[in-house]
Length: 340
Ligand SMILES: O=P(O)(O)OC[C@H]1O[C@](O)(COP(=O)(O)O)[C@@H](O)[C@@H]1O
Image (tube, rainbow, N blue to C red):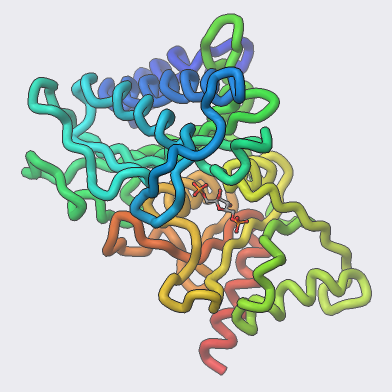
């Protein structure tokens, strides 16, 4: 591992490929192109009202959500940056119903890229951190025109995952399946510089993140877990817990990667047809890979997220991730309730 003094993302990836051989030239190029796209999105986000990018685009995505202008702009930046490079067989996005084929005028590659171009959309207009989340899979052998089915691989099949968080600084977090590393955008130089290697999430924590306003819709084991945290020192957990909720998954997960915590978006009975709010392929899976690579855990409350065999590109799942002893505790409560 190179020393952390001013190691650019480019150098980091070249040395990962040369010294460890667990990534090839195409994957290295793919990560570089995604990082460049995140840099362009960071600039667009940073312009705010001056860039005319705030507010609604007046259109809806496949989830039935109103698209923000920056959702559309970020999606276009990622498509345009990635479709001509020759390292992808197809792309898929939260903002597009179906996978995006590589135009025939461009060569195809061996990877599939699936992403949430702008996570935390509800925070764009109020200047709170948002981000981009991405996951890289291999295109199944023999598949020349990848359709939705080609993407439906368990999270364990990811060869890389990452996110960029556009906050006071822009930080890219990356795993290639061998630890989690952070890169901070040097705005003057225009390049991502390695600022953290092999991050580890503490196994225990005193901090939880959940949208408490949904409490009346939670299942009993979920209520039990949160009631015990809120009971603090005098309760069964015997210590106090603090709460945080940014409502941008990237920002909440980045805090957990930095100092521990548990992030929860459970199944709620508000709409029993929806097993959760967050999407498996481009929110839960990449974040679960990052968290597990940093020594944490990630479940649906019942099963390991990375073991789920997807059946739809935009399927939703409950998400419990972060400090592994807390994730274990709340998962145990759900399994206990299911067998009671
Ligand atoms: O509005 P709520 O219920 O607090 O949900 C917030 C969650 O929804 C999300 O904003 C969903 O993501 P998108 O913004 O990409 O649709 C997450 O980032 C966040 O954790």
